[in-house]
Amino acid sequence: MHHKSFFAIIIVSVTIAIFAPMFLGRGDVRLLTEIFLVLTLAQLWNLLAGYGGLVSVGQHAFVGAGAYAFFVLCAQFGVHVAPALLFAGFVSGCLAIGIYALVSRLVGPYFSIGTWVVAEIVFLAVLQTNYVGGASGFSLPLSSIREFGAAATTREYVIYATAGIMCFGVLSGNFLFLRSRFGLALTAIRDDVAAAHSVGINSDRIKFILFTSVAVLTGLVGSIIFVQNLRVSPSAAFSMQEWTATIILIVVIGGIGRFEGPLVGAMFYFALRELLAPFGSVYIIVTGIVAILIIIVFPDGLSGNIAAISRRWLRAVRPL
Amino acid sequence: MIISLTNAVVQGALLGCFYALCAAPLAIAFGIMRIVNIATGDMLVLAAFSVLFLSSTANIHPTLALVGVVVLMAALGYLLQRGILNYTLDPDMMRPLLVTLALSSILQNSLLIVASGDSRKVSIGGFETMGLEIVNGLTIGLFPLATAIAASLLIWATSHLIHRTELGIFFRAASDDPDIARAFGINERDVFSKAFAVVGVLTAIAGAFLAVKTQFNPFSGNDRLIYAFQVVVLGGLGSLRGVFLGGLILGVAQGLGAYFHPSLQIVMGHMVFVAVLIFRPTGFFGAKRN
Image (cartoon, rainbow over all chains, first blue to last red; front, side):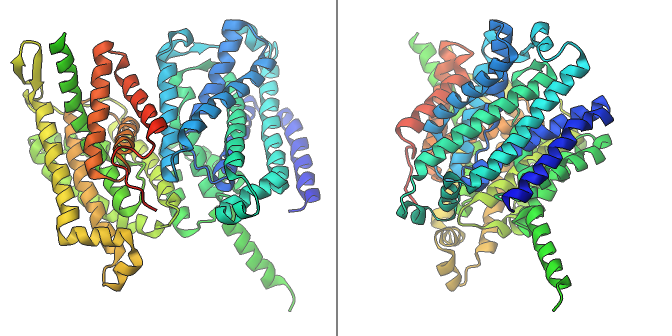
């Protein structure tokens, strides 16, 4: 995709997103906020795993760390929500440096479960810390909530806007990043480590930077998610199912290592979830089954498959 | 003081045997098929639920129900490999990992729908609370002892199967070099399906011990996988001898942690794991393989 057409699409989408809440109910705005946040997480994981080859299954550590850092700063230190948000990303990044030092020694799939085990250790540490409310967690104080807006509707719009900025920001950043020197180096490493080394790419350094920056942004998303919930607890903030497994399934369904993969996957996931809403957790089971089928039948995901079919179509309609 | 410390070590070692038993399916799936089965814990929980349902609906003793569950899990393992995992045999091992991650979500939420989120336990008529008093202050529970014996026997038997039988030679041949194995008439897909049936048998037995030992619910599989993974890393990836040692290290670490303070039990286990990760990332029996 060319720069021009990509940013044209982004500008149109952002314009629609700015005015959408005027025509939507509060429930729909909340749903859109959630879609933005989940899509951001999916993009970040795709960058990490699909392009960087760092298949982490412990990203919930950073969602939880960001959320807790934000809540602690607001509730215990009375910091304003805006600097608190930024600091939450910083804390998450610091955690990532420590975690990376540990798990980078593990190779391949053992790196993956290593990230999970370390995430569970972080979860356990938070669970046993009475300062942050132990197993029951704690709520965001009213004064901090008001900093997002006095009225509930203003507040929801501000949170919606923050989530939207995150989502479109990461989408554009992702697009530019993959075309930068760093991004090209990253795809070179993914495709052939030895060849990348031979042209002077330092893969260890790039992977470290990628892991840490993705963690910073994941922590930011984590704090916004729990601003919307107004309450944080260890089991919700460090949920492997919600913040890692679901995100991975979304990317796998959409197409891992493809720019548009997370977008297609998230659309599929939310459509399925809303469709199967009356049947409890059935949508998770269906998502899992679809993901397995995709891995076996279309390893490039739905987006890869759509691209292949549309290419075939275009070739068919082209005059001979 | 000496007695209570000995007690902590002995109880920890017994617990470690249970961890080793639960980790064996993970170690074998990795050792032979190079599959990191993220659904290991959920399959253990599935086996535990199956023992519970079979014994309560057919009104039979859980040990008898275990026979049925062994057959069921072996069949399930075989079909899982044959129908799904055989299509994801990659050198980079990422596709099977993602498949088992999806399987984990499917199993957890299916169990939630079928069995609700309540915590369950299987009772075997008082045996699980009986103990053997060695000296005052040191009592060995009969059930943990039985678990330790079962773990030793099973891990020995599996090791024998892999290293001393014809089927085991096929397993190792298909694992080490599928191309050469094929030249000798060994179909790695067939062999891997059989190996996953073995994994199913081990999962069923470990799951039955889990069902009696602790409370379990549809989401208990996560913790089980984490302990199993720690055991496998502590012992060295894919080594069965290592699994036993890794289990003992984790169990004794937890036992000593609990000796100092009850809340330190799990923390101490994690700390030992992190320390090993820092100082000896290949584990204690880790053989370097490509």
